[in-house]
Length: 144
Image (cartoon, rainbow, N blue to C red; front, side, top):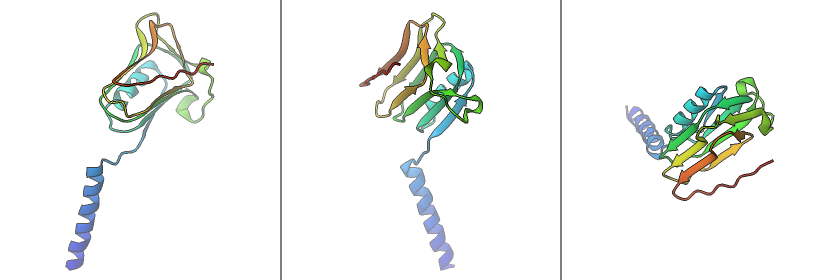
């Protein structure tokens, strides 16, 4: 009986440790249309994890927003083939198009410890390409 209590105490201790330390893992999304992209951004903003959004090749028309109060990182990568099994990094094959209306990709975050990476996308036809609204963000664009 003592062995049962000892094992139970170890299990409870380990479970408490994992719950209290908030151990999380990264979540990955594979998106193939504008609605899926916005849904992935919305989920990533609140799921308490570092996230990667893999965007399949194609044109995505819309104004996309990420509004988070978390400190986790977000990576958005374009150029993926169907099912996101491989990637061809060519910004011209994955296009976010604002259709002449508003901001194309807007990031709002009240905490700035997480990293933001956008790679392999063309941003076009908006009033602003990428908008970053945080307390202390830096944006280092790389163009090709």
